[in-house]
Image (cartoon, rainbow, N blue to C red; front, side, top):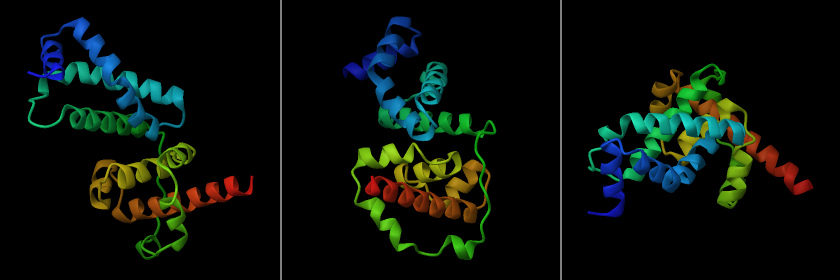
Amino acid sequence: MSDNEKLIRQCQQKSRKAFEELYKKFSPFVYGICLRYAKNRDEAQDILQDCFIKIMDRIGDFRFEGSFEGWLQRMAVNESLNYLRLGRNSFSDMDEENADAEDERADIVSDMTAKELLDLISKLPDGYRTIFNMYVIEGYQHNEIAGILNITESTSRSQLKKAREYLIGLIRNEIKM
């Protein structure tokens, strides 16, 4: 039995000490996910706390059938989205024809380092940041995003397109400096 499995099993038995150890071990990983969706570090910290409350409540649901990190990631993404659903996000509709238009300038984003991109992503407006994270980083498809956020697929596409355009503007501003 691995150390992680022992720790998780102790948490499932409601060991406070084990849960504190779990928090210390995995909070940086979960915080990184929360930070991608949050406007700032304070908001990410709020989401992190909410996430670990939910993890503590649902640790008994983990069945050791997949990776624990994958389970934590799903919990963190879902909790981040729940936090944003409280009225903090606004998604504007755009017709599908414009949403599908290719923008060659978006290739600039693919040439950046992960840290540079994550720093810029944190500067995106809520709706753009949420869609960009879900599509580009988490790997959701537009139909999945639409279902999760209760928006249309074309809205998801348009938000992604606008997020890329916004990022390009941020990149251009940084290059000029």
